[in-house]
Image 1 (cartoon, helix red, strand yellow):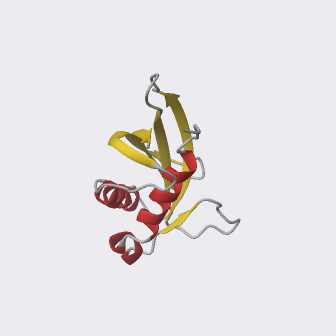
Image 2 (cartoon, one colour):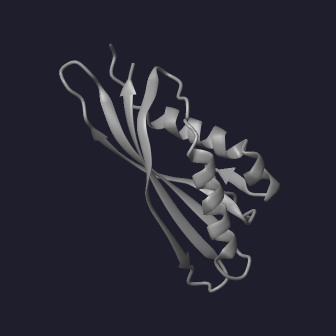
Image 3 (cartoon, helix red, strand yellow):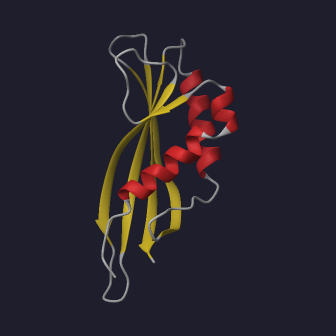
Amino acid sequence: MIRKTALLSLQEGIYKRLSTDSAINAKGVKVLDNVPKIKPYPYIEIGEDTVNDWSTKLDYGEEITHTLHIWSQQGGKKEVKEIMNLILQSLSQPLSLDDGFSIEFSKLDFMEVYNDPDKITRHGVIRFRFKISQE
């Protein structure tokens, strides 16, 4: 077996799930990996990852944290928190990955909402933890 990372496969699975979720689409939320200069508020931005190897002599796997950023300019933090709730609901269903990977478990790692320094934009951060094995 050739070892490889599940980073891209996980990102693609999350992107596909969130960008095709009917509740997220109904709210008019875009899911972006490359945010344009003119930002389409509200939107979810694909964020940072971390990888920790949990391989053994017989099995290969990774524990990956994946961060999503939620951006809104609708007054207050309500919209960010509503979108976070939609993300939680969407990612609570099992994800299927390509390239020979399977998710052993996933869980919410943390959520936080900030006021941006411009005093207009609200920024939510939600991070998930996935234990992934290579088949």
